[in-house]
Length: 585
Image 1 (cartoon, one colour):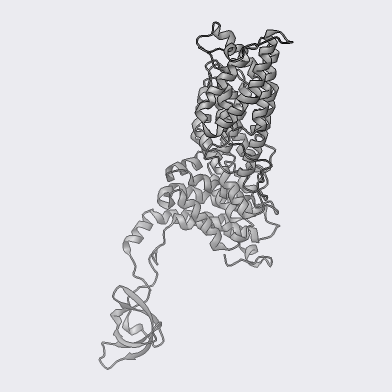
Image 2 (cartoon, rainbow, N blue to C red):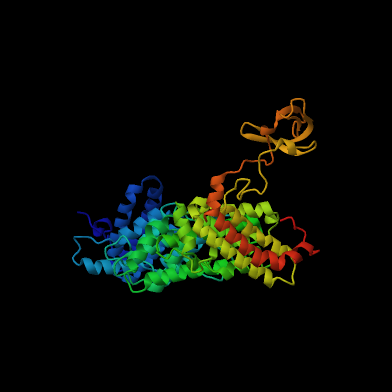
């Protein structure tokens, strides 16, 4: 077996000692020949890279002075970095230089000494600069509102960045000894946590979800934190890293952060601390001023709903209170701002969140679990009072209400009992609002009626023409008919409005009539039994249902509440207020 001495024999008389001469020869070989081999092999023969570093390790190990070893290693590493050596080659080199050799006499001392050798200022500086460059590039590429083109200031270094980071952290080594200093690891952590603050504006938090898991520094740090007995990252730092992953979402959150949260969840209150931190972030975002641009607002609400859904999936706290949308006061105050459309912001956040659930039952449970049992009607009223130009008309506001009811399962899914209680709550809320606004503009009060109008129409299906027995009989007495009377001609199951043009007495007492149909303006002759006084026939079963206390009694109850709480106290002022422009509602 060849040794270093076989490659670098001392010949002739020399000025230096034998050890010094051998060391100088080795240095020249490493810095000139071996360095060139590594660079060449990194591009054309990657399988030879490990052998090159094994030779380098042997050569450096043969030097008697540790300081001299350190100088040679730092020179080689510095030149590799300057030559733009790829990350994979650097990772293989670091791993090879610290790998234990089984035939070494003292494996542990060798391992420790070579880890100390590899751990140097050159590696620390490169690791920190790499983090700054890569995280800056990652932030720019994932920020949705960037108004600049990403310009690479230098050629992009190739290779497996994640392998290089994890090698520096000692993750692949059984002893898990880091090859970079603690200060470098802290720098990496701080670089990953730039968005981990409640002081950021909503637009600054608007980032693309990291579906591919390309935040390699965050991923590596979470892997390191999951190693048993890891002391390089504090519990608080782990919490912040998990929070950052929750914010960014994607593969790293699903495959690393959630599992780590479960592992650390065994520690007292760790998971509760995370839930509190994430919940607080969502609530703070709800109270931030929404973007003025509606497209940006949509993106902001989508991002918020995704974060909220990630939190709900790992907790049992499935209610709006933990997300910031469960307060009736919040929805009531949404229309107070004249500069920002908070009602639209809240509504879009809620709708995007509800769309994330698979079933209407889950969505309804989220709404019903809010501490405010009447939150549903407050949401509808907030929509109705919105100053958004899109919702200026009665029809558009009603359509918004329909969207919310439909996603909760519609009339059938919501249930008549809940709808009836919501109507009652809506009447009370509207009456209170109208009393508070007694000396203010009427327009906002009339707009607020939209929600109650919608709830009533949702509770009661479209009725037949008569819900109580008409006071006038439907059948016609021929002797009572006069020319010019407006009656209804029965044609099969339809009734057509017609005017009596002439009464014929030539077959007296059997009278017949000439009528003119209103729509077609055509005339025809008919007998009295085909003429009716009402456009639809009366259904006795419908009357029995009403009288027996079915839907009719519910209508009577709701109608009386509306009359006593809204119509009587406010009708006169609503009708004659000159500032009102939408009385037709």
